[in-house]
Length: 53
Picture 1 (cartoon, rainbow, N blue to C red):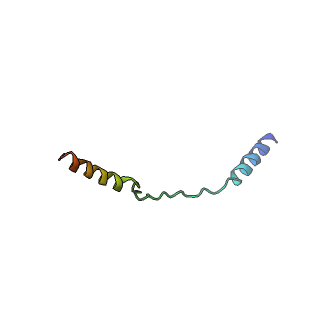
Picture 2 (cartoon, rainbow, N blue to C red):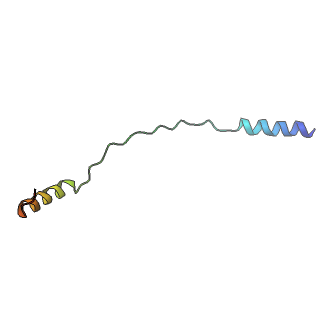
């Protein structure tokens, strides 16, 4: 009798599992830093002022 109860409990637990959803990952585009352009302008002005490069 105990074996039948164990088998029924196991089968009910197996039957109650949720279907697994597949996970897809999307590669994100590189987001440009908002200070990149300002830094490049300031860097070039600094190089011109101090005659670097």
